[in-house]
Length: 343
Image (cartoon, rainbow, N blue to C red; front, side):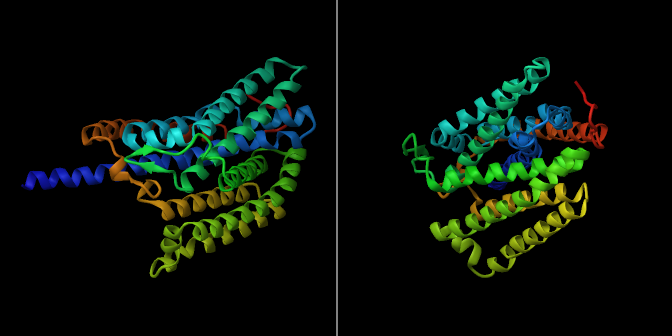
């Protein structure tokens, strides 16, 4: 009986550990590939080829490695929570296909742009369109998950276009704006002269628009979904949840202050903080559901032996990926100046 009790505790604990791995992978992807996609979204706002070269060179050492986190997140969902994977995938087939094709498209454009000079214009357009499409598709997937996927007996029962709702489209636009802000603050941190000044001019209105989207989502979801309204506004939850918008407002003020006062690092790290707080707010609204409000992390989990096997692999690989990421960002620290680059 004691052995059975121990095994039951292990079975309850493993999904929690694995959802932490999943959450960490998604957060790292959103932050790291967010600024990467963001510079592509902002590409049309920079007219000169030299400025675009400087922008591309600011992310050249990082962009491939950033997408490692997307692969890790997808594999974790598939291996550790297959029932959730089997529901989310058909519910968002088209946005996910658009996301993957857009990432391939922009990756090809990134590399071909350098070898196509002086006829690189079509690859500039491709890079921008691929970045916008990838960001928008991620927002569609997020909106699809949040708006309550139709599930019966752990199977998706909705239609092929259930993802196409005003809420998910709004989430798509919000992610595009958010990534654009990350891209602008990244350029403030990593570039000089005209590119930096243009990025500062773009960052301030992007910050205001992102805050407007955050307010809309914060009102829309509790109004439309009683479970979220109860989670946020019941006592004593409201006292803890209230800290999230308060800290978000403080970070937004610091970000705006840094943009206007010429700080290089402050806007970028504050914009990351805003993203992470929004992410924490979404997690606090929906956990322990992976497919709200139908499938919890324990119901979606794979057998304990599979979870343990994956967790051991993650315990080995995750520190290596984090170490690699830290080393690369340290080696290529500092600003990129016109004429400098890695190609």
